[in-house]
Length: 301
Image (tube, rainbow, N blue to C red):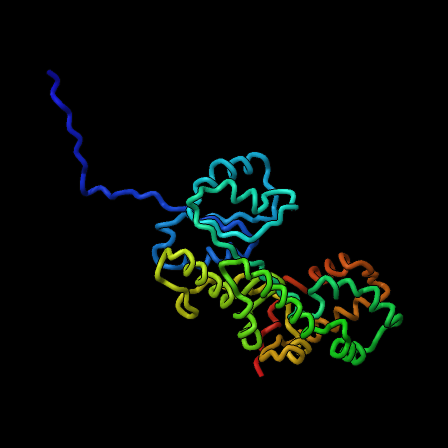
C-alpha cells in the first residue's frame, strides 16, 4: 500500500490576497479622484487602480482586452455617463459587460465656463462680431472699458446657466459637487481651466466616492494629504473683471493685461485671427498653458 503524502504549509510565508480592482472610466476628473484616494494608507496595497479615458477610442487589441479581460474583473466602477449616440463605449455597453456584483458609482462631468472672459465657446466665437464692432484698433483704455462693460462677457449670467445645468445633471449621480462649488468659488480657486479641478474640489469628490464605496474609514484632508495641484502651473488667469462680476475674493496679477493684449491681437488686422479655432490656438500658443509662466499669482483683497 502506498504511503499517503501530506502537504505542509510554512506558516511563516505571507498569505497573498488578490487585490480588488477599481476602474475610473471617465475624463481626467475620475483619474483625479483615484489619484487622491491613492494617497490614503493601505489603498494601493488593497486595490488595483485603473484609469481609462472615456472620450478616446481604443485600438482593436486594447478594446478586446478592455471588454473581455478588464471589465468583467472590476469590483468598483467609477464612471461618467456616455450617451447612447456616442460612437464607442457608451454607458449602456459598459454596464452590460461588468459583473452583476460590480459596485457602480456615477460622477458628473464638472465643467466651469464662467471664470474666464474668453474660455467659452460662445464668447470665443464672438471674434467676428468684435471686429464688426471695432473695425479699427482700440486704445488700451477703450479695450479695458469694453472688457469691463460688454454683455459678451456676462460672467454672472453664464455662471447661473452653467450651475443650473450641473444641478440638474448630478441628480442622477452618486457624487455631487454643485452645492460645494456654489459655497466655495468666491473664496477658493476651484478650477484651473474649464474642467481641470484644484485640490479642494478633487478632495470633495474623492471623499464622496469613499462614502459611497465604504472601502476605508479614512477621509482626505487638506493640509494632511497632498495631492499635488493638478495642472497648477498651467492655468487660465482670472481677471479683476471676473472678480468684480462674480464677487471673487481673489484674482491673478497681470491677468487684465493678459486679456487686454489678447483682445488687442484679435483686433489687429495683421494677426488675421478670423475663426474661433484660429483664435483659440493663438490664445494657447501665445499665452495659455505655459509651464514657465509664473507671473499670475493669486491676490486676495
